Amino acid sequence: MSERLIQSIERAADILELFISTSPELSVKEISQHLNLSKSTVHGIIKTLEHRGYLQQNPDDLKYKLGIKLFELGNFVGKYLDIRGIARPIISNLVAELNETVHLVTLQRDELVYVEKVEGPSALTIYSHIGKRAPFHCTGVGKSILAYLSEKEVDRILSTVVLKSFTEFTMTDIQEIKEHLISIREQGFATDDEEIELGLKCVAAPIFNHQGNVIASISCAAPKMRLDEERLPKVIEGIKAAALEISKNIGYKG
Amino acid sequence: MSERLIQSIERAADILELFISTSPELSVKEISQHLNLSKSTVHGIIKTLEHRGYLQQNPDDLKYKLGIKLFELGNFVGKYLDIRGIARPIISNLVAELNETVHLVTLQRDELVYVEKVEGPSALTIYSHIGKRAPFHCTGVGKSILAYLSEKEVDRILSTVVLKSFTEFTMTDIQEIKEHLISIREQGFATDDEEIELGLKCVAAPIFNHQGNVIASISCAAPKMRLDEERLPKVIEGIKAAALEISKNIGYKG
DNA sequence: AACGCTATTCGATAATGTCGAACGACGAAA
DNA sequence: TTTCGTCGTTCGACATTATCGAATAGCGTT
Image 1: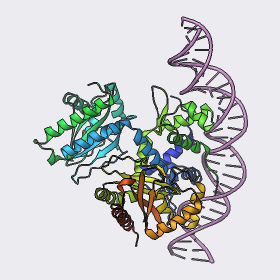
Image 2 (image 1 turned 30 degrees about the horizontal axis):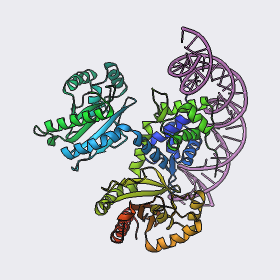
Image 3 (image 1 turned 90 degrees about the vertical axis):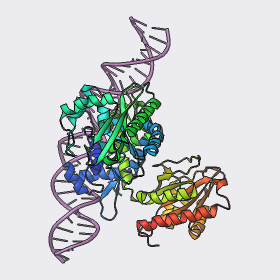
Image 4 (image 1 turned 90 degrees about the horizontal axis):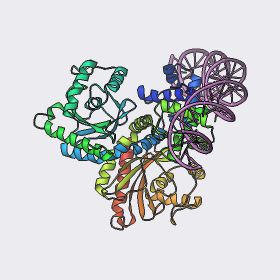
């Protein structure tokens, strides 16, 4: 891999992403401290980004925040995330049928990205938002995708992330997770039973492209008590059927 | 105004924005031709952007497209567009009441940006999408905002844009537009009567912030025939009431 | 009025981005 | 198979230019 990367662009990217990882509003000083750059360097980069609409300055406290140009670019990307347009109506139908929130997550550059979320009528709000990354080891979507990757890919992904423990049910042992993936593959779906948040249960199924590779996953998330013996089979069937339908619409010959 | 802008960042921005203005997929050669830069220069910038997830390369034809990182940043910006969260439920109610599509547009750096769109049940799809820019002179949202800006600001904005003529009803004379703004201010709402597209009619009303400055506008868009003498007053009242409610929720003391 | 804080400007210097040319990979045409 | 042409990528030399530290300006508080 060549390494002829342009510093100032990387620094600009560092600054933009700093707003996501720290705070939506930052001062020049805060940025320069976080990135170990001089204030004047940061100032130059910031003014360039502001000039282009990637940042904007609050006239009151002189702090900066991400600009409207990023909103425009981001929505343009969302428009051309083809799987999204295909999946949306199918997901909407599923939400109407199950009365629970459904998420669509795609695998992009070894990361899981939420790209669609249709909320059910219940007031339960899950910690998720479009554009955010999801962990692999403690979500239904993550595990359902891992289950259909090659062992090499699973090893690569799991070795680069920290297997953070969210609840007492979170699996943090790579070997344990890998064994778990076998049963997921046999079932054709994955569950998350309070592994990322107490009281939250998810059912997820993988989505495949025309080459048969897993590229995404949808999941139904609900309070554990609502996914009981009676409703669970119905939810599993619904999620599996919807995932298959999306896969087929993308070109999967299953 | 200082002019100490960083070239490579501006070039990176040029490249990103080129995807919006030309095509969602571009090759190195196409980019270098559009921007009058050498292939190697473009290549260096592109590889840096790709490394950070702002671009991604299609392995088949080696062309590049905008990357998922922009999707993430854009959605983060959308989350903190506070007016959006406040307006959304009010707009949804209005759509349910009017059965027509409603747009929310904000004024950002002298540009009109669509930030929310709730479609009515009718199949009519209007040429608009979130993140896109709207013209000032031939839309209800544009004119309703201009009507509440100072004459200085109106002059500045109208002098920097081209008053493109979309239909035979488009106003392209600055003086005519400025006189028209007076009556809009008297009425408290603006209409667009086939000024941007034949058969399309809009009713729009301005939204004010806590300082009483106009910052946004909502509009109801429908086929002209559906906004007849009978329904028009109802739509006008609905739009005006919703705009006022949003303004008050933002902090406007009207 | 003086202080502390931060954003902003400025000038010198060294770092680094840019260009043209060459290479390599691929597909089409002969 | 060979040849040609195209395009993405790499490389080295040079001059542009981004960077830093110091100085300035602007603001609010003591």
